[in-house]
Image (cartoon, rainbow, N blue to C red; front, side):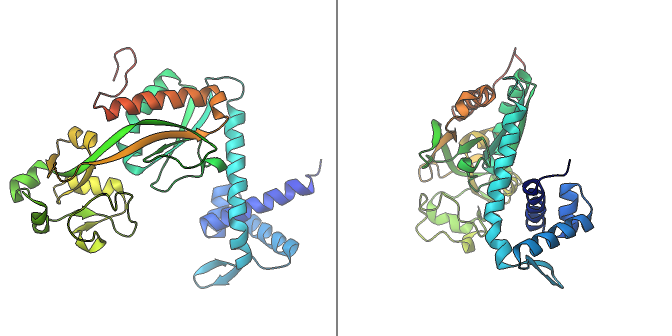
Length: 308
């Protein structure tokens, strides 16, 4: 049976999406499990169908045209819809199988979620967990993810949301740094110490911290937009930086100017309306709520039958 025109068009558009995401025909071919000539033919067929070029060839590689850039958000929506449909279909037969896709910030995804998810897997080994770690909010209405851990109240009305608790952050330093350089006794003395902070992406903490002067990237001796990199520098004794209280306690970091820097951020769980009727989504949502709440309160990670 010959494939329908709609199926053929979808295949072509999948190749276009892959090239836009990967940046080259060869990388898109690897992503799709096809050959580079096949991907090239798909792009040429689409250009003939649309009557306009999608890419310009240059010494720097493929440069998407305005038409390709205009199509890109629609292709992303289509890809997200297909991915979410596949997740739904994979777990349709039973509540203990299928995929749950999560999204969380770097610090939560790397430092807090792993033991919680490990316990979930022990309880429900048939459910596959996918985790996107990013400080950018995934679009849950488009099903970029099924469940999100957000550091702040969600604003979309189409989401089911539950407040997990309040996360406390402050300034900390490693013990060896404190032994070597001492710790500031006042906010003014912070100028005498190397500070760890952001590079180009202003974090949501901006506006919640007052050091008596504007907080810009120029005041930091170590700059990174990665929470994980900042924490690594903090633990290595590079200088003073912000950290969640629970994470700081785990690594034995020392509080700095506790009375001046006690920042509170709400932690929320959210998912699209309707997913709560899917058993594996509800299992994960409730498990995360319990585990995250325990972590915020300083309790040990969840266990099953006494196993950590």
